[in-house]
Amino acid sequence: MNLHEYQGKQILSSFGVRIQRGIVASTPAEAVAAAKKLTEDTGTGWHVIKAQIHAGGRGKGGGVKLAKNLGDVERISGEILGMMLITPQTSAEGKLVNQVLIAEDVYYPGDSKPEEFYISVLLNRATGKNMIMYSTEGGMDIETVAEQTPHLIFTEEIDPLLGLMPFQARKVAFNLGLSGNAFKEMTQFVTALYTAYIKSDAAMFEINPVLKTSDDKIMAVDAKVSLDENALYRHKEYEAMRDLREENPIEVEAKAAGLNYVKLDGNVGCMVNGAGLAMGTMDLIKESGGEPANFLDVGGTADAQRVETAFGIILKDPNVKAILVNIFGGIVRCDRVAQGVVDAYKNMGDKITVPIICRLQGTNAKEAKELIDNSGMKIISATEFQEAADKVQEVLSA
Picture 1: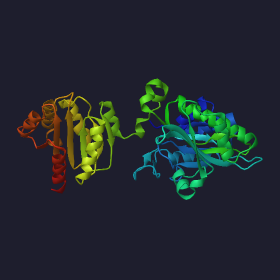
Picture 2 (picture 1 turned 180 degrees about the vertical axis):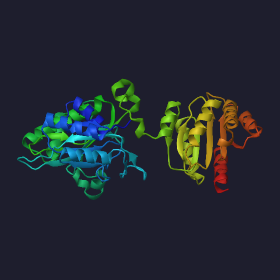
Picture 3 (picture 1 turned 120 degrees about the vertical axis):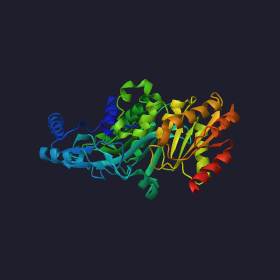
Picture 4 (picture 1 turned 45 degrees about the vertical axis):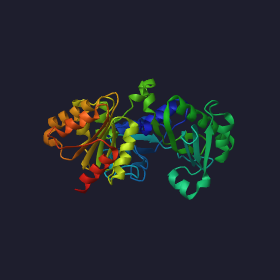
């Protein structure tokens, strides 16, 4: 589950991570009130207006701007709120901005020059260990840094039995070229950041930039946070942070119906029971010359209502030119699934406008094929993987 910047900062602050303070606003009037409150609390005269969407690169799309007075705050927030913000991480249509974060200006003059760093915490799947990735090149896309100057990216792997050791936090500060109070602050920052990552059951914390201020304080100026959805039952307060407006509406509908659905960019919809079979089915679709339009695991029960709901969700994607139903009948009998497919087809009537290939294998597979073949519905039955692939190829080339 992805969070907005202001939500990620709330979590960081709760674990002792110093953050750039800010107040979220939904209207220009709220933005002005937030700016006044920040001035009272922090003494800041300038404010940063930041669009709150689930995507990086907001500044490049015009979603992060500096306001030098309250008039600027009102005008800029009014321009950003309601805009379709397009960044390198959004679709071509962009994302609607519903909220802005009014943040304090932390790039103030002082004894030393401010510096920006990149720090993230995530799982290294190759080793099964958590990893701190960091670089002196803060404020830049880490992919660009990796491509152009890979020697400026450092990693520190954490032993899961020992956790982050003090010498590792000091090593991060040393490799970032810090000394004095900034060195001490960075070791505390890294330690608190890793604690936040572990105790919030996060999948990733990405702070870009981490700022060394002109008076040698270390703070998170941005926060990109993704939480492990499987652990949300332990964090009801985090679950309440979910912003459904930022998620694919079809995926939201599928989740509410108890279906595991992920939209993809292809032309063949698939409805499968079991994640492993779903992955195999997507490979099957590609080998037949198509591209999977979705991942949809219908689960262990495939009655008419569930199948009808799944069909309806798949058909909301205008790119779908065919649907492949691939069910292995183990716990659930194939003839029951076949009846569910036939009943759903009858109920949906002319809503089904694309060919359906139905491959059922397992318990009562023969009966299931006969049921579909004798239904009078425009459903193409198959029993073998290759047969299903050939049928998909036929309907796509027709």
